[in-house]
Length: 60
Image (tube, rainbow, N blue to C red; front, side, top):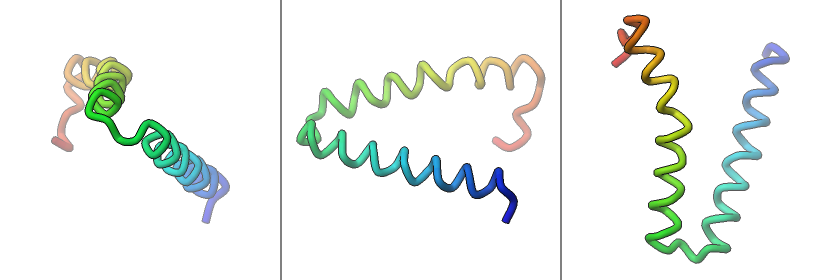
């Protein structure tokens, strides 16, 4: 496995564990999940706009 692959798997593991710990600490309220999903949408929006602008949406 390449070093970048190992780094990505490690980052994914840490992100997943952090998400689980945060969700458990917030007791999984609807407001928390709404805000988390809204934040995720806002963070991913530039990539979607870039993909549409460059015509690079073949994977969808």
